Image (tube, rainbow, N blue to C red; front, side, top):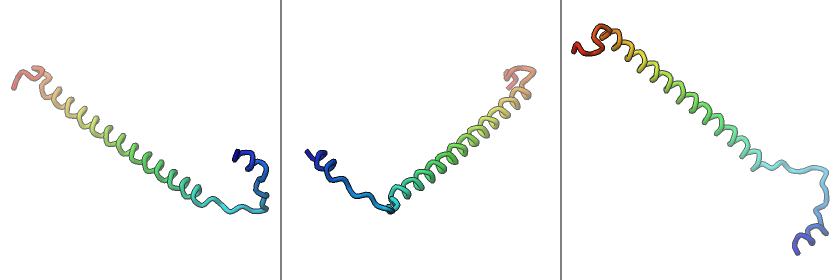
Length: 74
């Protein structure tokens, strides 16, 4: 019932429309959040890479230290 009334009386066209400030603000907020998430993800990946490199270097130091006995000389 309401659809017919709305179709029968559409709003008159305007020459200018006001910008949708809420939609613009939401879009800006969303872009900012996406950038923050991307930066955080990059930081997390860098931290994981650094940790992995540190573990890898420690492992190889142990291997070099116990190359003769495979760790049995302790």
